Amino acid sequence: MVARVIPVETFDLVIFGATGDLARRKILPGLYRRWKEGQIPEGAAIIGAARSEMTREQFRAQVSEALEEFVAPQELTPEVVASFLAMIDYVTVDAKGDGGWDDLAARMRENVVRAFYLSVAPALFGDIAQRLHHRGIADRASRIVVEKPFGKDLKTAHALNADLAAHFHEDQIYRIDHYLGKETVQNLMAVRFANILFEPLWNSQFVDHVQITVAETVGVGGRGEYYDNSGAMRDMVQNHMMQLLCLIAMEPPHCFEPDAMRDEKLKVIRALDPMGPGDFVRGQYRGAGGDDYLLEAGNPDSRTESFVAMKLHISNWRWKGTPFYLRTGKRMKSRVSEIAVTFKEPPHSIFGESNQWRENVLVIRLQPDEGMDLRVMIKEPGPGGMRLKDVALDMSFAEALGNDLDMPDAYERLIMDVIRGNQTLFMRGDEVEAAWAWVDPVIQGWEARGDRPEPYDPGSTGPEGALMLMHKDGRRWREIR
Ligand code: BG6
Image (cartoon, rainbow, N blue to C red; front, top):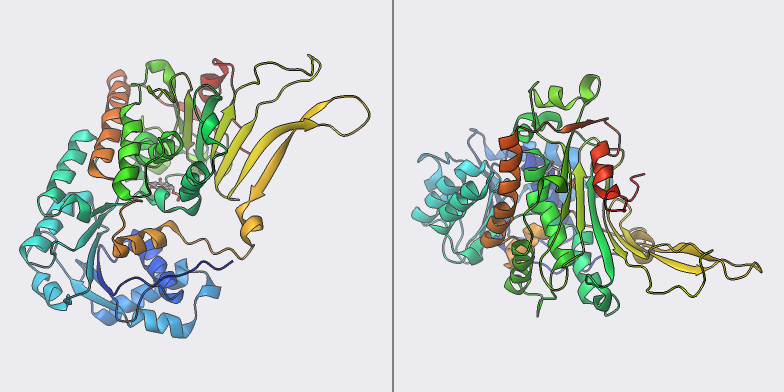
């Protein structure tokens, strides 16, 4: 099934940090695919901006290499690549100085959407925002896009928000959490709010607990220094996991509009109880050779967690009493992101003791093998009486919607939303700050106690302690296969 493509308006998109890793891996390949699909109109301009002295031709050659590396060969055709490259320009700009800004101003066209993607260190957000504003390059209709890490605590996030707010209004600021751009994450909203089926059961009366797992097989690799100052809590929980939690736990918004959605997500974050010392387990992968966190991080005494599991409580009418268990880690057994909603036992069994009851579980698989699976009890066929069995009503998106399903990468969707001026899938400033306000005391507690994370084997399912976190509640994690 080929997705319907509605072209966006003509735009000038300036990518600061255009020679960096994110631009090469995600932004430029994503734009190429949208161009190939016909969503980007003729006349749009993509302007790379970075500190390196380079000609437009040299930059185009770099973009061409990035496409070779990060776009599937079957998607690359010489004519499409050539027409895409023809759209690309480059300016040398000094984010902290005067150089290049006049040149950039001269290239911007009137009467087209102007978007500025800050794929640079957050320390430069304020400098760039200020220059864009003071030089008249950005106006009230322009959009500015920023990436995580959006601060490393509430104080720094608040300062970044203030830097941006000094020159841009909130309705111009697009804070990316790329999880929200994933098709399957957006599907969570469709499952919850386009079906009547689940809503009556979606509360603590019927839901025993919820598990959210984001397991990765990759380690910290070349990002050791950044990661070691961050850890799983800041890198994954404060943003991606928190967004998943919000989408699962939020009240239905009255419409699918940016602020209606974001108001409801914010309420979830604000309703989170503070976590106690027994509510989490931190882990660090420790193995021989290159699989060792301490080696990869380049810090033999690191206490940074590459894994965290935790139990959260949401204090509101809907969820009081239903725990949410979250876990995420690197160098784990396999790459799995999923959400599992486990329902409670029926109040009374008419089938007697000999039939072992199994929980109804709704599993939403975010990646890989995107799909949904609902475990239900049925009668085992045969003459042996009423014997029950649990089976899966299993649906894979690829099978249901066609194996040639075109799942755009998160960045493709999000960049097009910036051009369309739709902020629904972007985080609002108060949301980000509320998430930090919840995370900060947890991290401060760890730092104050000087806790060392529990070691786990690379390729495993995480530390022992994580299993105990659920066992002590009489529950268990879903298997990571
Ligand atoms: C990033 C984190 O935001 O998300 C990385 O910084 C992590 O550490 C990545 O690997 C996971 O994203 P995805 O799309 O591969 O699940």
